[in-house]
Amino acid sequence: MRKVLKYGLLLVPAVLALYVLAPIGDRCSGLAHALGALVLAAGYALIFLVITVLDVSRLLAGRKGYDLIPLIITCVFIGAFWSLPAWGDEKPWTRQVFSGQADVGDARSASLRLYANGTFSAQTAYADWSCTYTGRYEWENGTLTLLREDLPSLTDSAFTNMYRFAQSDSTWLPFAPGFASIRSDREPNGATGVRR
Image (cartoon, rainbow, N blue to C red; front, side, top):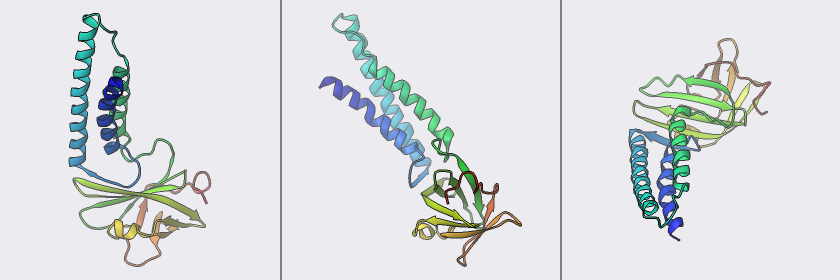
């Protein structure tokens, strides 16, 4: 029971800190989230230090051997904690096949990314706050359908659900009026990666 408590005390702040930073699902984040992750990491470091001091004191007293599992958990946590911010909004488990920027015309930016596994991420960002919404898409005959009905309301009308691709200027034009077009960072790879 003592080991379960010890490992649990290490895993709870580690998992919470990684959850705050992980690029999975819908999420909004800003400076408060980054500071929260750092506070959780500091709490983890304090718990690890106390556990290590107790383990070393038991080892020196000859009562018990040193427990390596907290050290292994810490190495995994540190590796994941430092690699997640480097990913940004990328998804390392799939390949990006399209990215573009919406011309929203206000103090925010809006970007759309399509991935080879048939998912998308739509992001709206201000100077210190950003929200990312994910879902599935279909790409067929030059028409992109974002399969998420609430996307226009979630993104404050930065994105709609259907676009057609204008190859002349590599711009995605919305079917619905009142929405911004999307400038392509590169042409979509429909033939080799986008699900139809």
